[in-house]
Structure formats: C-alpha cells, structure tokens
Image (cartoon, rainbow, N blue to C red; front, side, top):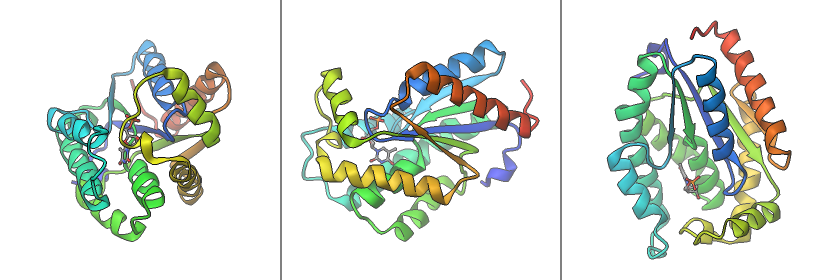
Length: 219
Ligand code: TMP
C-alpha cells in the first residue's frame, strides 16, 4: 500500500499539544470545504474506527498509569494500522479530502520527544503501521505550554492519562513538534496557535486552497 497508488484523494492532518485549538480548526476547515462542494471526511487518532476507538479508551484511561512506553507506542500504532486501512485509505481512494485530528507526527512528538522513545525505532514501526501512507498536508498549532494548560483548565474536563504527564513532558512535546515542522517544510505548516480562532481559520483555508490548486485537485 503506497501513497502513490492513492492518486485521487487529499489527506490533511492537524497536530499540536493538547489545548492548542487543532480540533476546532479541523472542524472549521471541513465545514468550509464542504460548503465549497468538496467531499470531506473528518476523523481522529487514536480512534476513527471501532477497534481503534476501543484502543483509544484504553490509552486515555487515567486508571492505567502503569502503562509502559513500549505498550503505549504499540497501542497507538495498532490503532493507526486499523484506522488507516479501514477508513482513511478507502476514503482517499474514492477521492475524498480526509481531515484527521492527529496522525503520525503525534507519535513522534509525544512518544519520541515526550517519552524519549528513540525516533529511529518509531519511524520504522510507524511505517509498518502506515505502509508508507503520509499526509499530503499537516498543520501544527504551536502554543506556549503555559497557555495550553490554561486552556485545558478552562475546559473543566477531567485530565486523561496523557494530559497527566506534567509540564516538562509538554515542553518536550511542544519543542518536538517545532523540530518535526522544521524537518518537513514541504508538508508541514507551523502556525501560531495563540492567534484568534477566525484569523487562524482564514490562514488554514488559504493554505489548503493553495495546496489543492497546486495539485489540480477537483471537487
Ligand atoms: P486528542 O486529545 O487530541 O484526541 O489525543 C489524545 C491524546 O493522545 C493526546 O494527549 C495526544 C496523544 N497521542 C499520542 O501520544 N500519540 C499518538 O500517536 C496520538 C495519535 C495521540
């Protein structure tokens, strides 16, 4: 399963530390593209398919603080392998724009930079899980950790297992995302997550429209 075989669809992913605003932006882009007549599918990781949603519940359950890094990595990748083959690839093959809230860069940022699992190992294992399917375009929303923590507190929802990771963990993840963006400037756009929501949405729309045009992507 290689990306070049998937000639028809377009794969966009949204990334950033918890609380960065990526999920709202993913929803706004989907709404805008649908209003312009594109076939759009929104999905998320971990999750997006029944088996992967069950794995998500396991991963985020704050009762499982004993989970070791190796188990965590394999569960995220297992969820990805299933979700990708069951949902993302079929939608790309039918020509849809697939908008996914998190994908492989979250594994590199959280498990690689955050948990300090060697990146080389993660890249190998991730490519086994994805069969080499890469996003066409990725937005990373950068936000100071302090601000992200404030936003999460304002949401007043109970902390999940990852959110309980602590400040230093989130600093490593934020810096990790910035380094991931710097390494893949053709695919990844790093945006300032502190900008007002409507300003960010306009930037995301403009950039996506430009990329679709570059690819001569048809509705
Ligand atoms: P969400 O809150 O954005 O839905 O993501 C769930 C959590 O899972 C979030 O804290 C980020 C984390 N995560 C990883 O650690 N590795 C991954 O590969 C993915 C997809 C998410």
